[in-house]
Image (cartoon, rainbow, N blue to C red; front, side, top):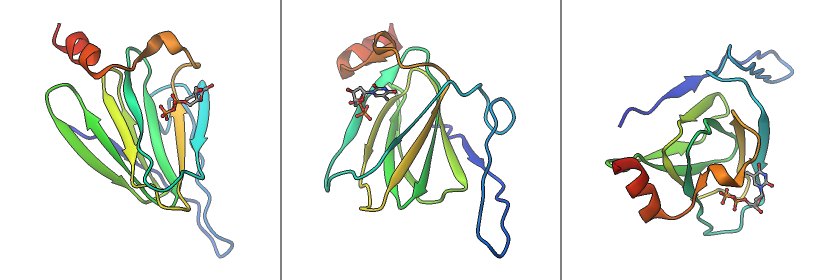
Length: 132
Ligand code: TYD
């Protein structure tokens, strides 16, 4: 599977690091929504859905977690443990998030506002949707 990762440039100096992200410049879409997942309980696995339209960039800004991507034909596991790296997730991609470290903060930049109708939450429905 083609995994698209973005390497963000960090404005580092002796005070520390700063990363700024602008829609359509540093990432391929306008950012309409931001959310973050933190204080994740041990052993939790979440996600279990795909989106019909939504595109996202996932950045583990603290700690680490793993992402399973499934395009209906192939799967790939991606480790996110670097705040300078953004994982692009296109529409029509099943995702699961797991192995969160206790300090993990997973920041998500989204191309659309929250819309439950955009979700596919049943795996078999996703497979049908993808394969026609
Ligand atoms: P949920 O879809 O279960 O999260 P995940 O897919 O990561 O397992 O979302 C948890 C709750 O948060 C659910 O009640 C919907 C709500 N939510 C919003 O209100 N806005 C949002 O942008 C997101 C992503 C979730």
